[in-house]
Amino acid sequence: MQNLATVATQVGVLFALMAVGAVCRRVRLVDEASVKGIVNVLLLVVTPSLIIDSLPFDPAMVHGFFWAFAIAAFAHVAVILFARLFSRGGDRSRPVLRLAMVFSNAGFMGIPLEQAILGAEGVFYGIVYVVVFNFFMWSWGLYEMRGKVPLSNSNSKLELKERWRSLRPMVVNPGTVGIAIGLPLFFASLSLPAILKTPISLLAGLNTPLAMLVIGFYLAGADFRRVVRMPSAYLAAAVRLVAYPLAMVALLFPLRAHFPREMMLALVTAASAPVAAMVSMFASKFERDVDLSVGLVSGTTLLSILTMPPVIAFAMEVL
Image 1 (cartoon, helix red, strand yellow):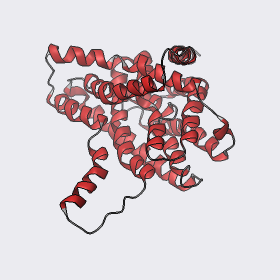
Image 2 (cartoon, one colour):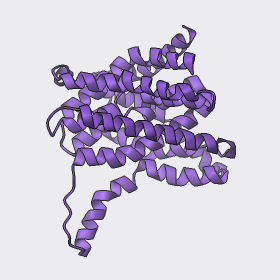
Image 3 (cartoon, one colour):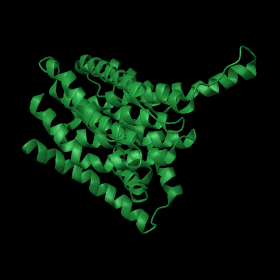
């Protein structure tokens, strides 16, 4: 019960910040254009800063990094296979349902919770999960949402340029930029000079308040009618909020004597977060079922106040 109360309190703090975002929308303090600008700052500035800031320059954590990466990658592959087998829907809705099962809001919602209940070490392993998330989101997720890009046999400069343009987001994105800077420093046990480290840390600190304000803004305008009329949406929500995180607990349980407890709990916390906001961003960009994506993101975010505390408390008890 103590674990449950601790997690519930921290989830409540996040929802209090979301409430501020909802109020800002209701009183028209911010509008859609303003929030899109905030989202760009979160994705392009705060996310790389958070990754760089959260990779400690400690060679003792290299072993944990590789194991956390391997476990998170295995879990993503397993749920991707499940999503491809059991998702139903048309061409516009099926990619949304698949991504909703696989991708959690591990960065915007998972990391603040890991910071609160696990501290800096928990955030480190949470960032490892986010690294894996970015890899799969910008590769398999992008492929699912965009669909197969037909390529001709031509080797002209124009054709090669088009191929690179279609593949570039998989290679160059906010996640890979942060990783490209942070990982060499991490493995070399180097620290940035204060004139760089301090502003990066300050920018990383914007992740929790700004992300919660954005989520609250969209929650205040969410329309759930599209979701409640679609049975397959219930399956996607159940997988994302309950089945996937409990499967992560089951995967880690026999290994609990070999890994740091903070690592295991961080992975479960990341896996238990609601549907990633990037699912809606991708659905909008590639003209998929945007209403369904927004409903899933918003609906699972609301439901997560009921599901995350018991799931994480259970993991804290058994791992």
